[in-house]
Length: 126
Image (cartoon, rainbow, N blue to C red):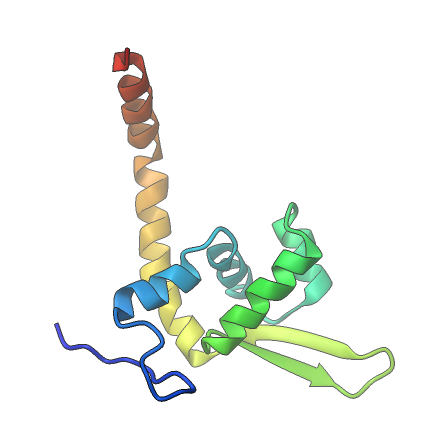
């Protein structure tokens, strides 16, 4: 497998393993949910807060910043009073929805089997 890495500010690689580098960032608790929410179109911060429910403002802010930094999300600020900020998916973010939806579908289809395996494992432990 060919390795393509982004350079860090100091000229070295940020993460020598491209798979780990990407999956560590989008595989956290909230990134998938934020990306799925933005699949429905452009949203403002409070809309995302309402949709996600139990995420804190600080965590949503951090997640959006990381997704923006990695090129998945675009943040648009409008010069209004009060300021209006919107978030939407970039082409990179949209391209990620294809494998993401496949993973979500697999998880949905196999959730019962995973739960059964966990219960079996726990019941067999001394």
